[in-house]
Image 1 (cartoon, rainbow, N blue to C red):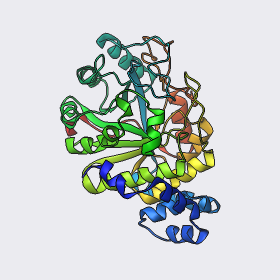
Image 2 (cartoon, one colour):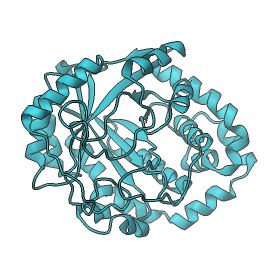
Image 3 (cartoon, rainbow, N blue to C red):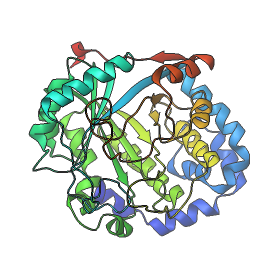
Image 4 (tube, helix red, strand yellow):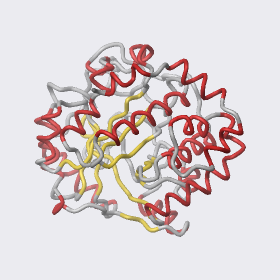
Length: 370
């Protein structure tokens, strides 16, 4: 069974109704448990949990320190192309947007890696591409991994969903992890945001995580894009997905992301807004639901929020991020995918982490484990 089949057991409307029907008593019962079920998670993500936020924060901090200590892992993204055949209505890389398309050459990828190394002692690199299988397909991604490998100990990709054998192939040239945003689990509305292109195939995308697990990818990252549909429902479906993956691919490590829509080319306006308080609630709920999951907060979020959440549940942060291909050295004026909110330097972010009494971890993986 693949996850698209598992999804047939759930109704978007029923899940939404259950979340909004949760009472404070159900929230209190969930908080009294050490191991939560999906029904408990829905209570913690519900409006009824708002008054319990301080208690949720305290428990989230406790579980995070038990599993991860007082540490924050650092990573940085490298965008190597904005070439894309998709028509995602919210994305700056939308195929219809009249922008200059850039596909970094092998020499330019190497220069970007060198520039990142000058920014700070980063060892965790996230390689990001648009989705163009013909101009920047698996061969291109494989070569990018080979070029980046001498510079970084841990390599993760955020690219188009691949076949299981393609993920397996990439693990042999240094791939450690894969991040993929489902964007929304609302099957019917998904087509509205992805009208054309390979990304319009809901089943292919949502089952990509199964293909990662089948290929033995060391770490899988899930995420939904906050701003498209009812965020509480989308987040609950992501929790269901995480639970499914943990049971089926139990040797794999997992991370979750909750990116909120940021300004980009095309001026798409979010359909729903998640406040900082609600984002914090989401992070606490996920930590209480899964004590071991890595919770990543990118530079989409503002410095004040990131400085506060790093002691309450987050385990990894990006810093110094450029979201345009070649943004660190070769093409600093290219179109960025979204506007960065936290533009502090890696050193400034590290200073904030140390000020909070936490240790910055630049390297948590070694080539010998590959």
